[in-house]
Length: 205
Image 1 (tube, rainbow, N blue to C red):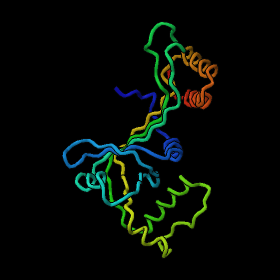
Image 2: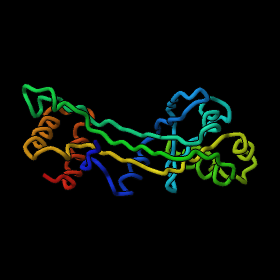
Image 3: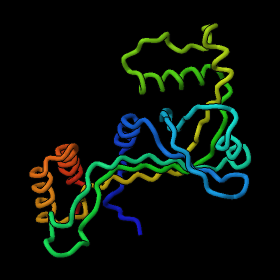
Image 4: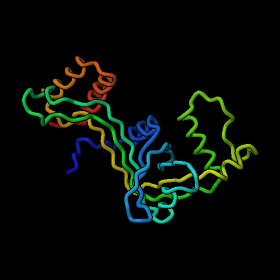
């Protein structure tokens, strides 16, 4: 059963999350009909997901045989122990997270200008401090590399988004979780509290 209170409809929230994340998980069906999941770096631009790599290898062979794929990005913020809200029952134990899953078609990118633009976006995400010549399809140093590298575009047919930060909790329990996180003071607990406060308006009792 899908929980509508965890869905995020705003495109800005989706893009901001995907811009923050550096890798996700590609799901394909291999030549033997088996599911195959590969972690890889990605960028999201123009409503599509992109990744790059070698033209050879299992994932590329799978895509050539079956271009329908899924791609998932997830970020766990905090584990929420049951005793934050119930001193006896284990049931409230959970995790707060953001996740995005896209179902769509994988397409090989052949246009060198598109490849260059995508790879430049990769560099800005993974090496924001610079220290390299901008990737340009007209640059004779880059042109052979752009021809050699495989860039794949995933065109989504459906995107599901779930940001879970206690939107389904009653006010008393939500306050208890916030207090528990503030007292615990874990690495991402303060950030989790901010997310809970941010998404609280989407909660309806």
